[in-house]
Structures are given as structure tokens and as C-alpha cells.
Length: 161
Image (tube, rainbow, N blue to C red; front, side):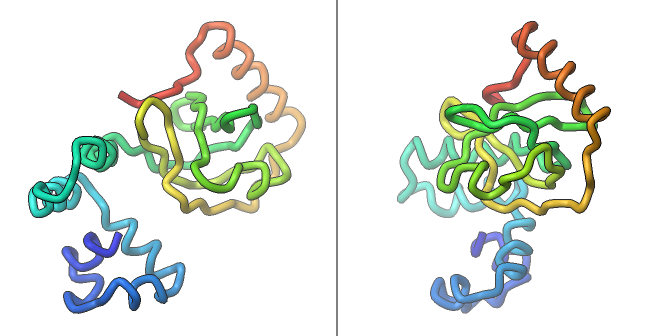
């Protein structure tokens, strides 16, 4: 994130890691929003001597990121089911740190976030914005029907390759 902020001149070139970590959440989020394929490729190229294969593969996952509005629909043992309204696609998304149910206790809930591949599963990138959108019983029922159909057809996306 700091690299992206510096590369796009959102941050000063002499910004230290300490200064960056003490930035506001909004500033860090804006730096994160600067990450794109060109920035990722540039970072890999400039740091190829210190990155291992796993780290490079993780970084390349940003090429396949999906930033959109999702409905956090269901909690399972190891992930949450997010429904991308625009494409009517369900994703099984793993939280690497805090579980979704501790961050979003009441579902269904509409959020905007970025999901991306990480090893053999999908994660969200750590930032999410919730929306003050109430999902009524009719819409929740409709999403549930779509979910059951996707589950039956085995079309719930579990990795983005």
C-alpha cells in the first residue's frame, strides 16, 4: 500500500513506514486504492531479488481482484458467502484475521470490498465499507433461493484463478 501511495505520488517519496502506519485509516485506504496491475508489476520488478515465489504469486493475485458491492449472506465454518449482486455470483471468502461474524454480526448486510485469490482460496483485502441498506425478507428469500441453486449446481466460486 505504501509503495502504491508513493508510486502514484499520493504519498511523499520520503514517507517512512512508521509515518505510514500512523496515518489515518482514510489515508491508508486511499493508498490501497492506488494498487493496480501496473503498480503490482512494478513492485515485483523492483523487488524481484528479495521476493520468493509465494510472495510473487500472492502479489500477482491483485491482477484478479474484484472490487464491488456484495451482500454478506451466510456464515460457514471456514468462510462467509458473499453474493455479488451485479453478476449474481456467490463467493466463498475467507477472512485471514478477524472472522466475518465478529465484524458483521447482522446478516444479510451490504458491503463494498475487494476480494482476491490467495493460495487456493479467496480472501477479502482487509477493508470493507458497509452500506445503510436494509435487505427485506423478500429479497433475502430470493437470494437464499439463488444460493441453494448455486450450491446444488456447485457454482459457488471458491477460488479466482
